[in-house]
Length: 236
Ligand SMILES: Nc1ncnc2c1ncn2[C@@H]1O[C@H](COP(=O)(O)OP(=O)(O)OP(=O)(O)O)[C@@H](O)[C@H]1O
Image (cartoon, rainbow, N blue to C red; front, side, top):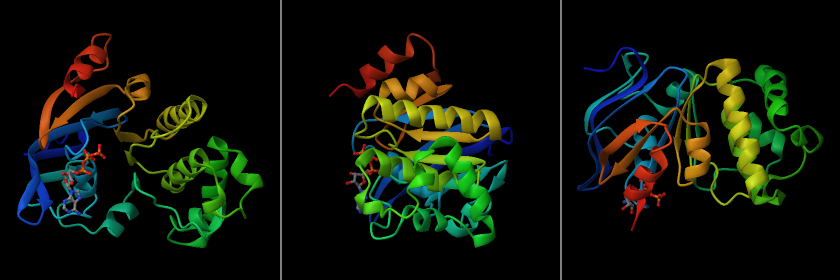
């Protein structure tokens, strides 16, 4: 049974590629308004899990629910229209398109453009002056901010982020952390972060879980002892 009190709940989820299940019997509940950090070593299935939630990879077993309602079989487009947003890890920008046109791709209609732009300028004011700059000419940190800005254009209720802090200098990580805290505070956004950056994750999350071999190996609240516990899990 899906957890009706959770914003996002997964019960006995399995998914994978070809003959192999990467995610196996995974259960997890993220509460409404919570920032939840999902960690794990490379190749453990974190990205696969986010893509399964979004319907980009087929659900092979189990249940996934948002606000207590099953989303199994829903298309990625309908999930995004229902208030879920995704900031992928891999190169996700159209390099030859401007900042403005990359942001516009998040929208169903240009009528939403002005509101969306105002919303992202609040987090990343530099974009206002540089709307015409091609995404491919932005720095790595600016590109990550643009990926996040695009995910925020429609003020999502549930935000899934895949290693948004990857490869960023500390000042940019801080800007992204502030944007996420602000988004949660102002809009009540529930955020599921897949992360390798422990300081960033524990700095903004309420709870954490470690994914190992396709299922949740351990989870807990963000408390002083969490860091050491997670480090033990991530040890090679
Ligand atoms: N399209 C695909 N076809 C086949 N196998 C895949 C595919 N995508 C990912 N995999 C495999 O699935 C496993 C989990 O990959 P995934 O990207 O979900 O891990 P991850 O935990 O996000 O890793 P990382 O921290 O390195 O990003 C890996 O062994 C990977 O090689």
